Image (cartoon, rainbow, N blue to C red; front, top):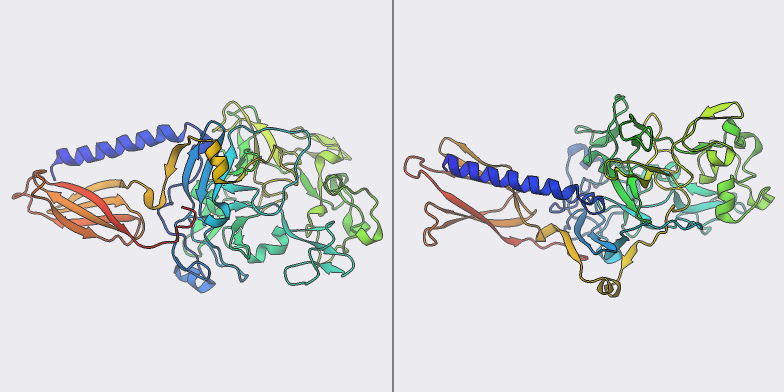
Length: 504
């Protein structure tokens, strides 16, 4: 291949990349979705031994055919954004210390739509079970609870195996301390129907987006980078059903000054251990609810004896229940202001919904936004992603054909999986001696036909079949440079292996 043709190919790639960059910064409601891996199969580690060996699987119990990962279609109108996704992450999921396996959620999610403009009602809506939003990689976001609560009559927690129903609905089990043994290394897990989801800071997608997370190739483990003191603003990692963005844990110190230092955002919730003016549950017992929980449950203090929770103990440590946390705003402290109350000095960034109004890189003029919350050591901290209520009106949800028809015509922003258009890799052409190597980004399990010609005459093309083993397909060709001073190449996908296309 002549230098001219190599330069032309590289110039074309540069043009495409520059064009993509201009699009990606246009509208964060569209551009923040992580689509780079939608041509890859979803994968899991079935067990710890597989993870140690780095052996992942594309089929498993309940997923008999491979399917593609993440968000694979985005459409929009002036009023709504529509996404299709498998609900399966673009990184390797698992293993879990539970019997559940993830499954393509195309039949559940179908088409999920978000309103373009948030609204903020005076009366807030409690978050419920199931998806309260989606991470930008298409994985569901769940609230803080695991769906069960303490049963006073049975003197124990309700649970999936307790056989006593859901519990009293007063002392709700927090998912992080009660279920984290079943979380994988990305801090997510699947529920019985196969919906893979995040209750706490989703460290896997944060790593993909470059948000101060480390990954150990040897142990296959993610961790917060606690050794650094210099941070960049977290990216948007998800969208909640009230169409407010969810950011990682790092934001500007001054919410309205994008030149101020970036630091970890501080939750407005503290354990009820006697500090900051909270009740000390280790002394008083679980005989009262924090103010926010009284409002959520429609109850008042003091509770009756039949509404008590268990004593703080090894089996019921402080933090076992969501109601073990107090919101500092209910104790006289003010969000965003260094306050001294009861002899304690504290400053917190996020309100009881886990939201603040601030400038961000994507919203330089300001937006209401959720931030995922962690401790200084990197551990998840209540309320993790979203408080007990949505801050805005949660009008997002599954969309039927009828509602989509009413919003027509839609504009397509992205279509991936097998419908994507292949692109050249970052280095599309290399020449070493008499060997020319072509590289392009391929759909997994796609078969390609590479055609070559020395003069672009339709009668002189010769074909080579290429079946890539990864998402970067390559073809090597030995050529006599002296005898063939130039050559032209074209690539066409000819077939794709069968896959689980429910929801595509």
